[in-house]
Image 1 (cartoon, one colour):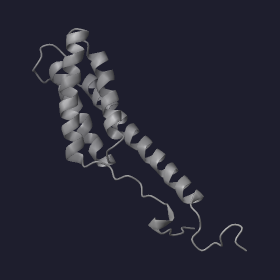
Image 2: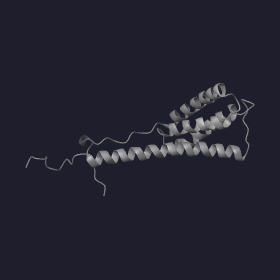
Image 3: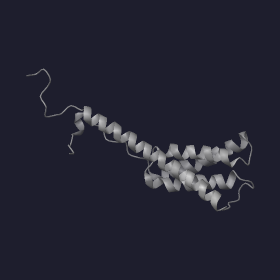
Length: 143
């Protein structure tokens, strides 16, 4: 059964996810920066390391995004991975299974981050509502 609680009773709404264009801008810029850092620190031609770092970025961005932003986030991260983490840099290619697997990993990371955020926010909202005082109940000790 659903019970409505007035907002003045201490219940706070679940945070609103960020807009998809904002998440995509962060994915585009963040992916370029992270691939550049991986290429400069570990050397070019390390797509496995770059995929891991970009998957973490996709999951982190998923924490503040809607589910509808996940495909765009994965594609933008994949573009940076494919274009700059694999020699020759600056050339987009499609290598069937490999790129499908990379896209799948990035998409799964973005969806996982978003699902995790939704579960954490829902549990927190449930706890706040479950512990909020009932506005119609008598005061304790005020018999």
